[in-house]
Image (cartoon, rainbow, N blue to C red):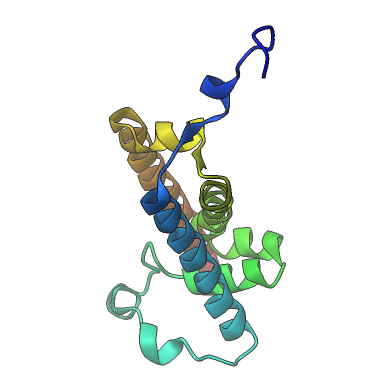
Amino acid sequence: MTERQPSNSGKSGRPIGSAGRLVAACIFAAVCLGFALLWAAEHNWVKLGPVLGVCGFKQRFGLPCPGCGWTHAAQAFVAGRIGEAFCLQPASAAFCIIALIVAFFALHAAVFGVELAPLRWARSPGGVKTLVIAIVIVILAGWFVTLAQAIAQKAGS
């Protein structure tokens, strides 16, 4: 690079060390493994029912809990039925999209050794607070949708 060429190193990302690259590779592998497990369950190669059990909240109160429908929605998502995933449990489908974004940033960090600005923001105290609030809102919104669906189904029966 000559003296006349502007440097954009502050804009593209901050270099990370080999330990950071390893952590990023592990995060990418974990997300891929999770999606692979859901894909295998969708094709009935793996049974998740015995591991996850039955929802006690739904048994006791007759209404879905905030986690009801997450597995089925995630399985629909990995099978490519994204619209169905949003109809089953909107929060689960949103988290699948977030997991894909996380996997992208983790793969980028592992391969290129650069931490991009959105990742730095997410790890900052303000970013963590914002993300936690957003996660709670998404989970509650998804729960309200599944509650509305369950109540409408009960009323129609």
